[in-house]
Length: 313
Image 1 (cartoon, rainbow, N blue to C red):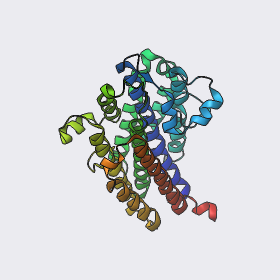
Image 2 (tube, rainbow, N blue to C red):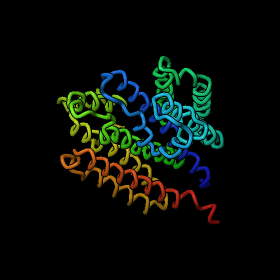
Image 3 (spheres, rainbow, N blue to C red):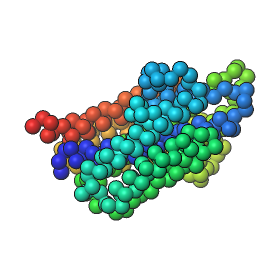
Image 4 (cartoon, rainbow, N blue to C red):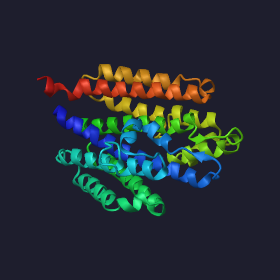
């Protein structure tokens, strides 16, 4: 397979997953804003911190209120990570690899982009936001299932699987960072009564609440949620499970020694973490920050191994 084709498949999968998880994150904040009492402040800027896009936001907006943050993450044409841009990038990558992707896959990605673009005003309004974001999430999941069920599971699909799960692991860690940072600007008397609600909201943003209750069978607590979303090997959106999927896909590819070895190392780092030692907000934030850097390194090794061959020639 040509390295440029492999790279486009990899990024197509990452952009679809990124669009879905950005939609999930905005929904989580929106639900939390409805659930929390007015006297407990909700910092919308935390979403920008999680995505690492604070600097660009500050260049383009004067206020970090709900309206500005939601517009930046959904619709801003200058922000490469906005949903409208990630869907456009996914569409372009699948358009240029249509001979390897089932025809229905191209049609579904194209229809998702057109839906997102044509209904953007509804998504920016408080009244229409949930329906819009829920549709984006559902259609992204439909595309993921379509590719899994109708695309040959050869090297082309291994790059799709690698991109999707590396992005998923990264974004799950970022959504979990919601808990690490706290999301809320507390007064000294307000944090404790709402901690459970905060962690439930994080689980729901990843569609993890029902599976958590089935397998953990205890009340929702920060330590149990962090353990479940970091180290569970069976839940598809847990970081350890997503890294296992990356490992499996990489093991099928040629010349995989360096990226595979490093991905195994990162997975061991996740599984070896002592959760009880992470349950301080700053400590957990530092751990997740380091984990995100390691996942960026996995991407770097993947790019060096498979995507730069033709450029080197």
